[in-house]
Length: 254
Image (cartoon, rainbow, N blue to C red):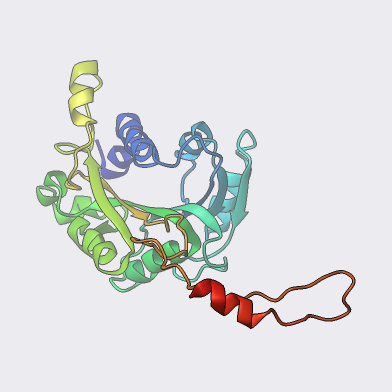
């Protein structure tokens, strides 16, 4: 099977959708807004629809935007923004899903920073992992058929150094890019692990949200009692305050 056919294998696509669904479980089913950056294909739209996300997709290519517009069964907002220069305001979306799609080593870091800027609750980064066993054993000619490869540890370290949240990684397609069709073997090949060493990896960054609290100071002892002081006497018949009888007060205190 040729490289392009392997990259679009139905079994491999099912394993990727399963991993992405697992990575979005923390925010699914709550009606959150989601921004998919570099949505080159429509394969993940069913995953977003299952989780009841309000989806916006960015695609720089007019052909991709036309393909997204043809998916009328999904209510998707389409934008022509580039991944390293998004026009959205800070924290405009609850979740951002970024597909790394560039060979420039400096641009992925800018794209991850932009995704983190527009996301309020978390960022999910998807990419082909150059540290996986299938790509380590693959010839350079076959690697050209796939999207740009990225280092899973490099993506994880960038979020760990710059993000203000918990970072985790997972991967799928550990031994082959063309999983078998047998049900038992397909489960083994499509399994995701806690480390991003699969051929297709996902790094998730969940932002820390501020916990509700109170600005009142804590008191560990009751406040001291104030000494007795003479009070001002007032009567409705009087038009002004009259000072108390200090002589009587002194005799009672003594």
